[in-house]
Amino acid sequence: MYADDLVLLSASVSVLLKMVDVCKQEMTYLDMKFNTSKSMVLKIDRARKNVCNNVKLYGVDLQFISTVIYLDTYVLSANVFKLSFVESLSKFFRSVNSIFHKCRGVMCEKVMMHLFNSYCKLILLYGVKSVCLSRKNRSSLSHS
Image 1: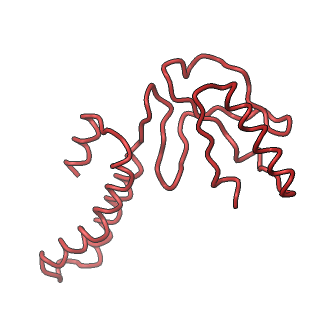
Image 2 (image 1 turned 90 degrees about the vertical axis):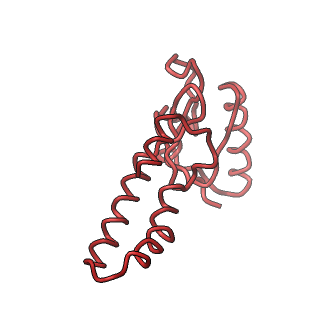
Image 3 (image 1 turned 180 degrees about the vertical axis):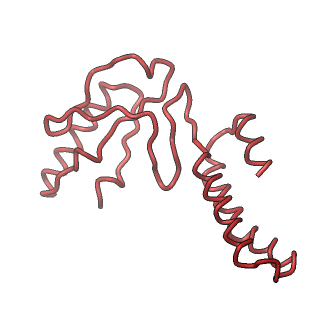
């Protein structure tokens, strides 16, 4: 197990602190240690901008961040659980342009559409089923 594979979800900071303590105890028992430079906190609620108690790991204050990458998906600090599709759109257009460049008008349209559906579409739609899409996100993805 790697520490960057561990995600703690908590309804409050006080419960999160208890969870961090339990994880530290288990890591000590396993003779392992968390990397504090890669550990961070992301708040998702209406009061996310309010200053709260610092979460410490081995005496180091963990950084509160506004975006985190988990399983190649960008999770945003917002009022509700929200994903960012900016990187997905960028990767999608890079893969489409790459196929266009490789084909250079030599392949038939049917083969190119199969390649787009097999590779590019999967990049675009990764993680979409895990959230309720906003109207803006649905529009952006459908126009792509």
